[in-house]
Amino acid sequence: MEHTNHGHKPRHTHRPLALAALTIVLLLAARLDARPAARPGWAGQERVVARVYYEDSRDIARLSDYDVWEYNNIGERYVLVAVDGPGYAALLADGWRVAVDAPATERLSSPADEAIFYGDYRTVAEVYADLDVAAAAYPQLTEPLTYGQSYCLGRGGCLTPGGDALPGFPLRAIRVTNEAVAGSSTIAGESVSRGQKPVFFLMANIHAREITTPEIAMRFLDLLLDGYGSDADVTWLVDYHEIWIVPTANPDGHWLVELGEQEEYGGLPFYQRKNAKQANFMDDIDDCSAWPPSGGDHYGVDLNRNHSFGWGGDGSSGEPCSPTFRGAAPASESEVAQLEALVRALVPDQRGPAMDDPAPDDTTGLFITLHSFSDLILWPWGHLYVDAPNKAGLKAIGDKLATFNGYDSCQSAAWDCLYAAAGASDDWAYGELGIPAFTFEIGSKFMPDYSDIDTVQWPENRPALLYAAKLARTPYQTIHGPDALDLRVTPPGPLRELTATLDSSDNGNRPIAAAVYTLDVPPWQPEAMPVPLSAADGAFDSPTESVVGQFDAALLSPGRHTLFVRGQDDAGNWGPVSAVFVESPLLPPTEWLFFPAVVGSVE
Image (cartoon, rainbow, N blue to C red; front, side, top):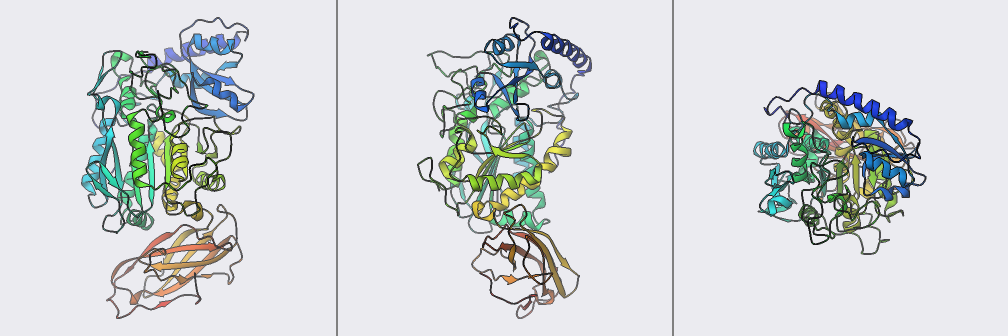
C-alpha cells in the first residue's frame, strides 16, 4: 500500500518564523560560545542544543535528568543535550565542558519544511486506519490484534496540563503470516496462544517524538504484503515465519507530539518523549505538570526505561519531569506491561535466570525496536558495562545487519558506543527470553524531512529488516552460515540451470563446503528432499563460491514452483535460505526426476 496525503488542513507557512529563529539561534550561539566557561550565570530561556563533553562514557549516566539525545560522538567524546539557559548554566556549574551546537539548534527551532507532520507523517489515527486497510486487503495474511490500552484510554481519557482532551488509544499490533501453512499462533479476541512458527517481532515509536519509526514499520508491513506472491523470499517468510509489527508502542505520546502542530502551540511538533501519565504519585501528589512539553522537561514515564528487566539503573532517572523518568516501579506502565505480555505469549523463555546464563544455540525468535537517531545498531547489555552471555552471537548478528544499512554495531553500555539505558526493551527481550534483541537508531534527526524516509532511511533499513526476519528460526546458529545470493534459473525451456552465489565473507568468512536446493518446501521441513549443487569452479574451497545445478522443468507439475537454496561452511554452519520462483507450463509427469550437477549425500 502506498501512503498518501490524508487531506489535513493546509499548513501554515513558517519561512519568516524560521528565518527569525535562525537569526536568534546564530546570535545566541555566538554569545554562548564567546562566553568564558567560568561564567555560568546566563539566564536566557531560549532552548539550544549543547555539546556536552565527557572523559569516560560512564559519566553520561550523570546526565539522566537532562534531555540527552540518542547520539554520541565517540571520536570527539560529546553527547547532544537540549537545554534552556538555566540548564546550560547548571551543566557548567557541575563542571561539564559545554558548547552550543548551532546546526542541531537550528533543527530544534525550525521545521524541516512547510509540512513536517500532518501533511506527510502519519498521525496515530492514520497509522491505525492504515492497519485496518491492510487487514481488509490481505485477510488471508494478516491478523490485527488489540493487545491492551494506553494509559489514557485505560482511565477513560486524560486532560493535558493545558486542558486538551486526550482520549487515549488501544495498543495495536498486526501479525503477518499465511495461516494456511500449519504452525501459526492462535488469536482469540485479545489473547494469543503460541504457535510453532518462528517469530520476528518489530516494534516502533516507544519514544513518542521519534516519528520516523512508525513510518519504517509501516513500510515493512507494505513490503511483506505487496511482495507476497511476487517476491520469492518475502513469500516464504510469510508462509513459514510469523512477523509481528507494533507501529507505535506509545500512541498517547505520539498524540502529544502531534498536538504541538496546533496553531495555538506554534505549529511545531512537541518534543514529548514519554507517555501521557501525570499521576505517578512519587510524593503522594502529581509530580510533574510541566506544560507545554519541552524536550528536557515534560510529564509522563519513559517507557524505554520502564521494562521489568534491568529497571532502575544507569541511564534512567527517578525525577518525574526528567526525559528518562523510569516510573514508580518496573513495568508500572500499561504500555510496557501489555507489550511484555504479548511478546511472552509469542516467544518461549529460553534463557536461565542468572545474569551469566547464555541462551542455547538453537534459540528461536528475534526482536528489533526502532528508535532515532544516530545510525546505530545496539545490542545488550544496555544497563550493564559487562558482556552479555551471548555476546558473540549478538555481535555477529548486529554486525551483519549493519552491513546493509551502514550503521555502527555496538553494545549500548560501552565506552565506544552510546550510553547506558536501564529498563530498555532490547535488554528485557534478551534478558528475560534469551532471543537476540536489537535497537536500530535510525537517521540523524528526530523529525527529518519526510522525503528522507523514502530516499534514505527505508532503502537503508529494508534489507536489514528482511534479513533479520530470515534469521528468526535459529538466529544464533544461522548467522554463522553463508548467504545464498543472486539465485537465477535459466534458460526458459525444459532443461533449466540453477545458479547462485554462496558468500560467508560477512558471516564468519569460512570456506563454503556444500550447497543444496529443495523444491517447494524449505529444507527444514520433514518432507524436503535436498539436492546437492556443485561448485562452478570444480571445488568448494573459498568463502565465496558460485554454485550450479540442473533440473528438468518438463517433469514438474504445471504452474509456479519455488526453489529454496542454502549453503554450508566447513564448520558445519548452514546459512539463511533464499528462494527463487520457477514456472512450469507443461503437463504434470507421472514422476519427478532431478538432474543435479553432482550426486552425493547431504546431511
